[in-house]
Amino acid sequence: MSHEKTLDVICLGRAAVDLYGEQIGSRLEDMSGFAKYLGGSSGNIAFGTARLGLKSAMLTRVGNEHMGRFVTEELARGGVDVSQITTDPERLTGLVILGIKDQDTFPLIFYRRDCADMAIRPEDISPEFIASSQALLITGTHFSTPQTFAASKQAIAYAKQAGTKVIVDIDYRPVLWGLTTPGDGETRFISDDSVSAHLQTLLPDCDLIVGTEEEIHIAGGSTDTLTALQTIRGLTTATIVLKLGPLGCTVLDRDIPSSTDDFDVFTGVRVDVLNVLGAGDAFISGFLRGWLKGENYQQCCTYANACGALVVSRHGCAPAIPSAEELDYYIANSAAIPRPDLDEELNYLHRVTTRNPKQWQEICGLAFDHRRQFFDLARETGTDPSHITYLKRLLVKAAEKGAQDAGLSGNIGVLIDDTYGQDALNDITGRGWWVGRPVELPSSRPIELEGGRSIGDRLKTWPREHVVKCLIFYNPDDNHELRLQQERQAQELYRACCSSGHELLLEIIPPKDSPVTDDTLANALQRMYNLGIRPDWWKLPCMSRNAWQKVSNLITSRSPHCRGVVMLGLDAPAAELQAGFDQAAGFDICKGFTVGRTLFMQPSRQWLNGEINDQQLIDTVAANYIELIGFWRNRKAPV
Image (cartoon, rainbow, N blue to C red; front, side, top):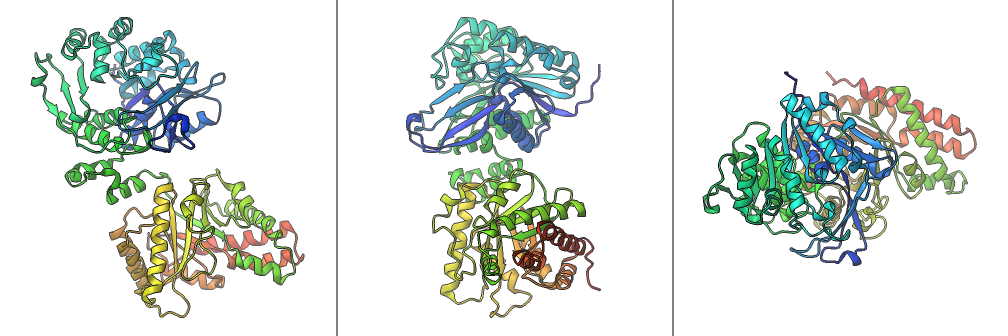
């Protein structure tokens, strides 16, 4: 029977949450902080193959709780089909706590007793769904209990009926087979005849088997690698991929050689090892990138070994897996990259090609991150500054109303500070809005950051979805000492954002007393690029079409992964902003605007004076916002 193959691979098995200790070299007992990542071997592989450009899907169960939603949402953000993830009403999502003690010690504890993904049942599996994929991948833990074994066997039966290839990643964890104490997750091999015999019942149905030497030992029932391989070959014609650690791997699709010296070894790239956990999931993700597209073994293993090399040099499993662009860059330049973790270009590519995949084609932002201006306004009107906090929550409602009435369709943006706007930030975080948040000390020149010099510590407390916004009054023709001081601060901020994972919006405004030509802003951006600062966003004032062309050309050539430019308002009249929008018409790099005082200043003054009520403020600001959205959407290049 013929079936349309719309997917490349379906991954059945573990999907969990990894809590990774952040203190390298520490015992788990002494860890004081953890990073939360997607985990579970099958979940990692689904995520990794999707990141590498395959059409992958996840088949599992998660709990009906926050961590289950995290797993599902993280897979979906990574491009994985999550339509067949079932929510289990009775069980919790699996959890793993991991640490990095040294190059040989990686303590981990599995919290998986009666967890959601081990409750998958045969009736959870759709034959039509299995038939829609080129391949079905199952990882070893899901052969370890009667219920998961029955579900896996059912999925394999559907795959065989539909001509879907069956892949088994042995992924042997003795603790998950009940062969060691619950806290001993680090042990990778314990010989057990019953486990070997059990796994061998599955081998005849396989098209591809992947494992380390220890995993081949358990599948083949012998601690002699050749003997184990020969036993496996006697049961199946499947292609066998044997991982050899830092040596690389070998692929065996015919008779097993009589000596390991006869293996055709595909060598890997030698790197300094930080973390071996998750390297196997990255390896098979890379191998499948080639194998499922019919590429030769040399290319498949090149992908696989390079993926493994990158992941062992990084913290985490799923998030450490490279994108296709990043992987291709590394393969082409690996000889010149002895330390992937320290290579600037490689880390940049990882940052920008694995960030939130949402493509903001348009940003219509209401900016009310102003602090000094609101304080001055409260003082002018004789109002207690504490009222500013409530005012900013009303402005959130104005933004929401304006966006809804204008039909922004999710392209709503706001700039909000945490000095007066923390409650407003809390109101909107998690709603899918574009949220920018300032870090600069208002009006400072040279630039200073709020909260002191330790910007990295401050960003640790911010939700990852918040975009770090920093305004610098900067002209590349500033005096040398001032320019260097500002540039050092910009570099420090950029490094902090790279470390924390936040996107950075750099706002450049030439000081009022400085000369400005059509080259000024392009030269300012070029100077930042020359310093290694590549923000995700730029925020720039209105400029001429000639200046826009220079800026557009520069960003396209120096930072093609830049999200784009948003325009600022500087309290200009709406008609002046409309003319500025027209100057930007036709330049795709300009994604929209984040404008504030033009829209809210007068209504806010009236509200603080008691001249209008809450709803009137909301309606007035929303109307101003809608008018500006109209100007943006109807912009026309001057003739």
